[in-house]
Image (spheres, rainbow, N blue to C red):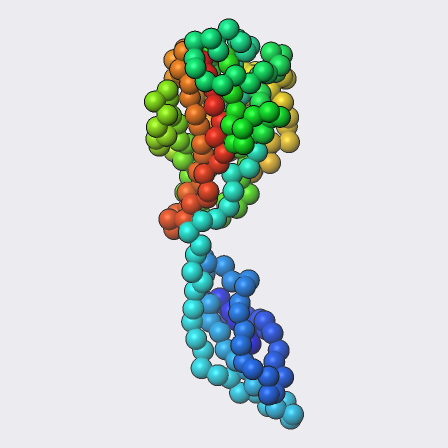
Length: 225
């Protein structure tokens, strides 16, 4: 069994079947981005070859691909435990010297984060499967709890560069827990400065592809101002 890209010239052998074996083959290495030509090449004992009719096919793209990894929420100023009194939301005790809360802190409900503070917020996340990505949809809800599309972050605008990393360090400080390892082309960011004090905001992130596929929604992160 041989395969080549539809506009290509080089045939590659995917598998070899012996005479008398059932002719069945599933191509698990094809990319949904390309059309492929397939042919079955028969070779006799004398080395003479005969090709089957060439068939062209394209894999169906999965509607759900990739995963938002290591989503982190940072705040610009120190945490203020007193602000928790203004809300009826559960309280998670956080070290006041830290302005970042990891994705699954001990004692928190799965996928939930609770921060108490004021100022600017920032999201930082990792996404590895970037081929064909259109952008990252940021969803946000305020105190009414309704999650709505909020901002679309295009990959070229949201990628963490050295300049962005330095800005994060300036705004959130060394306590942010962010190091230069995020300058790898796979990390992205979003700054949100339009927050009102006394309001709880929930964020989730979804990767959207040009062909209509999406990633699963990230776990939620919550900040209370």
